[in-house]
Length: 256
Ligand SMILES: NC(=O)c1ccc[n+]([C@@H]2O[C@H](COP(=O)([O-])OP(=O)(O)OC[C@H]3O[C@@H](n4cnc5c(N)ncnc54)[C@H](O)[C@@H]3O)[C@@H](O)[C@H]2O)c1
Image (tube, rainbow, N blue to C red; front, side):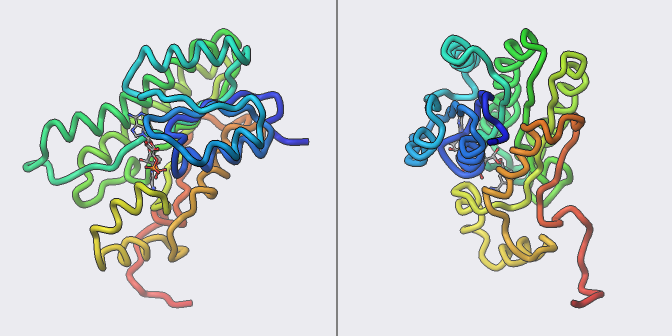
């Protein structure tokens, strides 16, 4: 039996990268998947073919009304919302003394406030049903600092603690909330960042102890675990899925 049969999942940022890979995985596991994004997606036809009833919608995570409307539509059409994955996000950063204030606000609004607004909309029917699993996509950069991280790291650190607070508040209603903290994953966002870094990219790749970049499907696998009943006693965690990026510092003392 498929492991998410009978479940309805909402994935934000579903047009691309980690969100699309999560939608594909959930559809393959039998869920009806509702995707939302501000961009169009070529990837949705296979999802809709795999999981009938699945659909893609334009909704900006910064728009509270659009998010609430979409959740209302999900409940009217499917009668339930079991899973939320918040994958919508943008890259950003720079050193604080030269950081443009509008850039700070843009990244916070999408990554942190947008995540909160998605959770806010999804929690209403989940509280009524007294059941649900929320998976936020934070980052290793929400667990530790890095050069030039500023607004991105602050937003992702906020996502980690927002997720833990949701786990605190809604555990008694049988709603779980967990954050995934990916290392560097080969997606369009990653390409836009890494292509400007030249040889520094090799240094970043080598901080992953597996000595490679991650794949979107590897984050989708963790999202599936946290969304499914396999993780029924897991809530409030920030799961690093990072090829060992946060396992420690390597200085070349050992060789294998
Ligand atoms: N790729 C990585 O290395 C990496 C590492 C750690 C965390 N993440 C996080 O994973 C998430 C997904 O990133 P990705 O790498 O798949 O990037 P991506 O650019 O491939 O996908 C992000 C999606 O979010 C959408 N989006 C952006 N702003 C939006 C808005 N206001 N409303 C709705 N949708 C919006 C984009 O249109 C895009 O489709 C992001 O939150 C990102 O910060 C990525």
